[in-house]
Structures are given as C-alpha cells and as structure tokens.
Length: 336
Image 1 (spheres, helix red, strand yellow):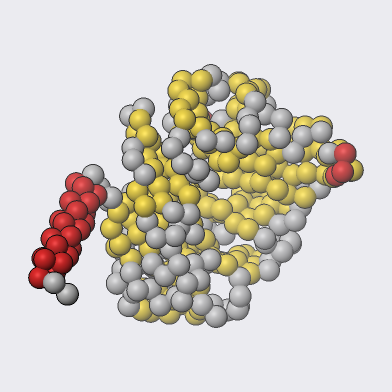
Image 2 (cartoon, one colour):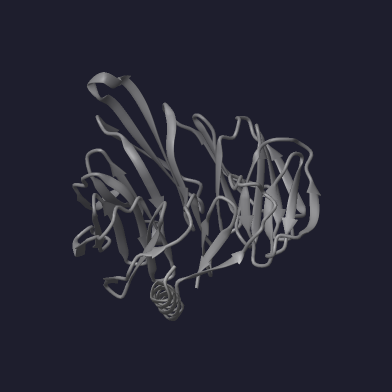
C-alpha cells in the first residue's frame, strides 16, 4: 500500500471518528436514552415483568425473581402455583393463574389472595385496585382482597380499562361476521356506588376503550371515536386507519394513519400534524407524548414533535409515574 493511501485512510478514519463523537454529543445534549437496566438474566422473555422503583420483578417457573437494576438477583418469592402472569407498577403487583389472583406489595410479599368464579385472561391495575377479566366476566378487587364489583357481559370481552373511579368493559356479539353484523356493548361501572350502566352499539365494533379523568370514557370503533360522561356523548369524530389513542388531563391524543391529532374533551380539533415516520402506538408520561415503533420513538411536547431517536428494537413500552421504559430483546432502556 502506498504511503499516500495510508495517509488518506487515516484521515478518513479520523473524520469518521470525529463524526461519531459529534453525533454522540448531539444525542447526549438532547436527552436521548440511556440503558439503566441491563444484563437482566431473562434470555429475552419480557412477557411477565414489573418495573418497581428500585427492583425488577420477573415471573419464573413457580416463583417471582426480584432483581436489582444491574441484573443481580436479590431474592425469590415462591408462588403456590406455576404458570400464570404478573402485572404491576412500583407500588402494587398482581399475580394471577386460572381463577386465582394474588395481591403483592411493592417488595413482592403476598398480602392477599382470592379465587374468582371465572378463569382470568388478563388484568389491569390502578391505584391499588385490579380489574380482572375473563371471557365474559369481570371483577374489580382492592389491595385488601375485597371485591368492589363484579359482573357478566353479553358476548365476548374485547377491551377494558380501569380509571380512578370507574371501570369500562366492552364486549361483542357476532351474528354474521362476513356481513359485519355485530353488536358491541359498553359496560361503565362506577366504583363508588357500584352502579353498572350498559350501552348497546348495533353494527359497531369497539376496539379501544379508556376510563380517564372525572368519569370520562374514550372509545374508538370502526365507526368513530367518542368521548362520553354519564352515558352522554360529549363529542365524536371519524377516524381513519386508527393506531392508538390516549386521554390525558383535558386532551385526547389520537394516532391515525401518519398523523397525530390533539383534541379537547369534546373531540374538537386543537392541533393535527403530519408525522415523519410510521408510528404504531403512543404512550404518555406527564406532559410528554411518546410516539413509537419497533425502531425507536419521537416525542410530542409543547405543540411540537421532536426528532426521532433510534434505539434497539422496541418490543414493548412500560410507563410508571416517573419514567417510560422501552423493552428490548435483552435489555431495558429509559428515556433520559
């Protein structure tokens, strides 16, 4: 190799190195993301994981493993059953298997248990309460194992959510699927007075529901998105190529096609913007809206969408009261 070529190659390598440093400085200066949870001994299975304030809880075969942020096992919480699932946040963990539900505190200690009269298919939690759903049954349980309310629905449960003071469950009855002859039902349950109200939606398929502030309920179907309170429709709008939605404070955020729409509680358009990239879902932490796909995320804040941040492949997103975590195949990162 000639001296001139060696010299040129060194210049190219130095230039590339300098460019990498500039890019690193750029991402560090704008936040980017850092890996706080690394080397977790999970071998890529993050289907049953709870991220606490100081520990990570992972469901194993017959026990829950408690791990530090650097992946070291702290202790094992033995379970009376094998299989099942766990959900939780930094204060409250729920383990369920078949019709059995176990309530654990933030250290992983089992505080209470209950056997329901239906196999549990999924569970969501909020404010130390758990909404357990089966094929056509539901129950809301508090952290002292008291059943706040329970019920059965028409057809098959398809969406569900638990708010501060209300649970919402939707179901579907299919009569002729080829002709789109379906009927959806929405069950709104007031957790204070235990009152259940059912509303019928003929020829409509509801595929998203959310109970959020002050008794408001957001639903999105193949017909429209709507916001309701006390069974009255406050606002509605057509949605095309729906991907995700979320209510937060006095705003409704709807991701459809390649656009993000920001609406008030009457679903009146406040802002709608074209997005650079094909996002699949959204999550909200405080006043920041994270739009993400399998390759990374962008953030909407103060009326603007900030640049896309590329990460390792994103498999899931977990939000708690203080952080948003991006779940990868063998690590977890938190936007900083």
